[in-house]
Amino acid sequence: MTDAINSILKKNSLSITPSRLAILQLFHQSSGALTHAVIEQKTGDQFDRVTIYRTLQVFVEKGLIHTIPSPDNAILYALCKEDCTKGHHHDNHIHFICDKCNTTYCLDHITTPNIALPKGFKNKQTDVLMKGLCAHCNQ
Amino acid sequence: MTDAINSILKKNSLSITPSRLAILQLFHQSSGALTHAVIEQKTGDQFDRVTIYRTLQVFVEKGLIHTIPSPDNAILYALCKEDCTKGHHHDNHIHFICDKCNTTYCLDHITTPNIALPKGFKNKQTDVLMKGLCAHCNQ
DNA sequence: AATATAATGCAACTATGTTGCAAAATATTT
DNA sequence: AAATATTTTGCAACATAGTTGCATTATATT
Ligand SMILES: [Mn+2]
Ligand SMILES: [Mn+2]
Ligand SMILES: [Zn+2]
Ligand SMILES: [Zn+2]
Image (tube, rainbow over all chains, first blue to last red; front, side, top):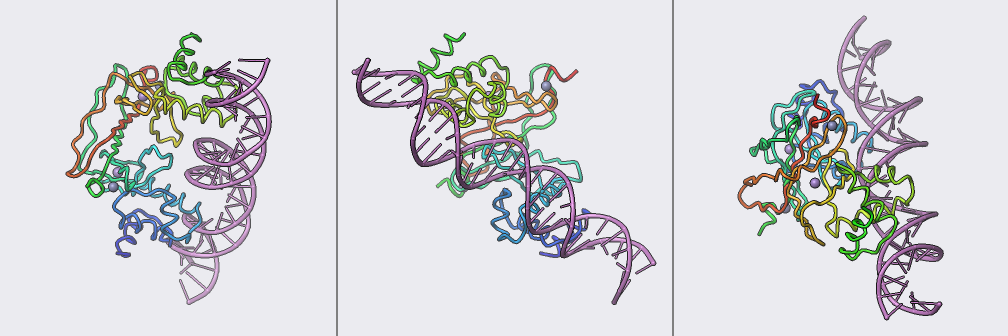
C-alpha cells in the first residue's frame, strides 16, 4: 500500500515526505471527497494547516486530485481516477452530495451532459452537483 | 421603481428598511449574481456587514433570491425569477460563470437536465455550473 | 402617541485560506 | 558516505468570509 503511494509520488516527480504520503494515502482509502478540515482532523494534527493546504495545491497541479465546487463554502478534493496529468484535468463526471451523511461521491461513470448555451456563449467546463440521499442513507 | 421594491417587501411580510430596499433594488438592477463583498461595495458602506448577511439570509428564506454554488469560495446570490416562495425554491435553471468578466448568469430558460443516478440514490436537487466566455467577452 | 415587535450596529468570535521567511528535510552530486 | 543544492515545512502574521449575543434603534401595530 505505502509502496503504491510512494511510486505515485515518484512518478509525478514529487519528493517523498510524510505529509504527502499520509494525505495521498488518506485519499486512496476514502470513498468520497475530503475537505481540508477533514484531512486535518484525520491526520491528527500531525501536520501544519499550511502544509496541508500546500500539499493539496500541489496534488491538484499534478492532476492527482480535483476540486469540487460545493455550497458549503469549503473546497472539496477528490482523487482523479481518469488520466489527469500535470496542468490537465479530464474529470468530466458528476458529483453527488448526501444530505444525511454528508459524503461527496464522484460518480465517475456518469459523464457531464452537453448543454446548449445561448448564442455567443462558449463553454469550457461543466460541473454538475446533485444532492439528495445516497444508497446507504436512503432506507 | 422604489414602489415596486416596496411592494415586494410588503407582499413577503418583511418590514421596510433602508438596507432591504437598497439591496433588493441592487439585485433588480443587476444582470448577474452578486456576492456579499460586491453588495457591501456597491452600497457604499452604508450598512454593517452583519446587516447585509442577515438581509441576504432573509431574502433566501423568503424565496426572493437563491444561492449559487461557486468555485470561488464565496456564496453567490441571484434573484429568483420563478415562483419561489417562503421555504420553497423552484430554481431549476443552470448557471454560467464568465472566466473573463467574472459575471455569473442565471440562464433561466435552460432547465437542469434529468440525470439517472446509481441504484439507491435519491436526487433532491441538481446544480449545473458552466464556465467559459459569455457573449460579451467571447469576441 | 404609546407600545410591541423586529432590525440594526457593534464587538467578539470561528472558519477558511494565503504569503514571507527561516529552519528542517529531501534529493542530488561529489 | 558526506557535502551541497533544492524543496518542503512550520511559524507568524495576515486576509477574507461568515456567525452569534446583546444593547440600541427603527419599524409596525394598537
Ligand atoms: Mn470527482
Ligand atoms: Mn439562478
Ligand atoms: Zn449518505
Ligand atoms: Zn464575460
